[in-house]
Length: 435
Image 1 (cartoon, rainbow, N blue to C red):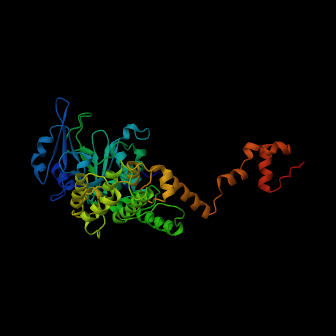
Image 2: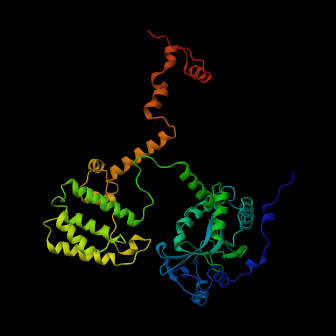
Image 3: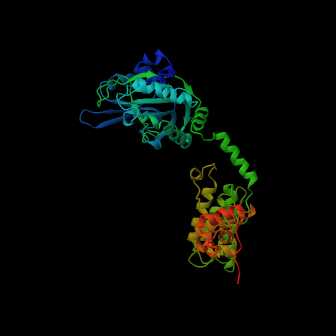
């Protein structure tokens, strides 16, 4: 039978091969993009140096980098090339170190590239925008429409899936972060002495959402839309029961519940917070007021509450709490708590500061101000209730029906273990004689 040469699947496109280094940089990082690409070059003494460029400045400096081993980032940054400075996601990519694989070791790069092209085509992926021969391997780059840094969590997951899909060709698992750099076409790979060149590619930019779904489908995973649909189905099918913790609360709703818990705690001690916890309690109470839009006169409320709940506090301490709360409440709100400038606390942190034990939180029926142990306990109770509602057996019931490995009833019947399970499956187990 005649075998098909994988190179027949490779797109015959001479245009990428004629792309100059300047054209490559312009394609990779167009003008008016967010942030700037970073250049890394190896110095003669073995050290490295990095720069981040904006606009077309890099094109003016590019010829100076082609005389030494030089690299350019595939994504863009604000300032130093670090993951935390990511400005925009620009591409998905894999670095194919095919020489490390048994199947492709010693093969020519064009043969590896042709086979990889057939590999991605057979799995429903578009061809890479750019294919580089790096001097020792092959790099495949899929350019995507520019997206801000907020997409990076999804981007990392999609990149990991793409790497897994490319492992048969020696995809480098370490090539998986935002600040990754690839060699610049026209530069020399100092390890092999070969010049880096563009071998192939569509030169197109792809929709990130579409490409992400194609990658997951190629890996046999659900698309993002399918995951959201499943999530909605689970919500409708499995309503929460028992003492489940409140979910999906706004900050205002959550802090209203915290305020209610603080009042329950105060009333448990006869209306006055115990000495040693009064200043802390008043601070948390004032913090709750800063999150409530219709709180009214915050200053008067704090002063009145201090007189009732925390008598004996120094006037200076009360005034400091008031000034702090008034200042925080005056700031604009946003969806990011840490950007508002307000104080924000977990319920477990408040419980720890006020020395509220798991048992006390349970006895008082607190909803938010509860220790970590109590939160885990309630979650476990809710999960058991959910499983019971769906017909799951309790542990005692399960062990009662599945304790054969301990009691070994086949010995009492005088048969072997395998025979016992055969008869049990057939429903023909003999009954044991009872005294």
